[in-house]
Amino acid sequence: MKPKVILSALAASALLTACVENSMPEADEGAALYANNCAICHGSTGRGDGELAKSLRPAPSDLTAITRRYGTFPRAHVLSVIDGYTRMENPGDDMPEFGLLLEGDTVPVDIGDGTFSPVPRPLAALLVYLESIQQ
Image (cartoon, rainbow, N blue to C red; front, side, top):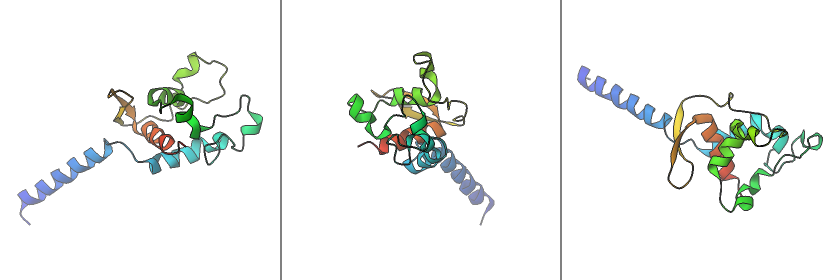
């Protein structure tokens, strides 16, 4: 192989990797984060019946009913709840803050009405997973 062809192949590979890393994650990436951080309270199915649910007041939310509660999946609101931004509105909320846990490279996320916001990839992955379990 000629050196120019090898360099072109390497450049194309690097470009493809950059595009994949900046694209929206799939639900399975978020499922792993959910299992490690959320299932203890919200349950493995997201219905609010996790191992710690009985000891928490108020009880953890049924995450499979978010769309039903709001009429549409409220992406911006869900992101705010996960990262801890809503603690200002609900200081007694037992939901832990995951903002520091969910840092990293950002991906553009449509937070509604075609508005895109840079969101850390792990947080975006969790969002996509929660959207995928709506009933």
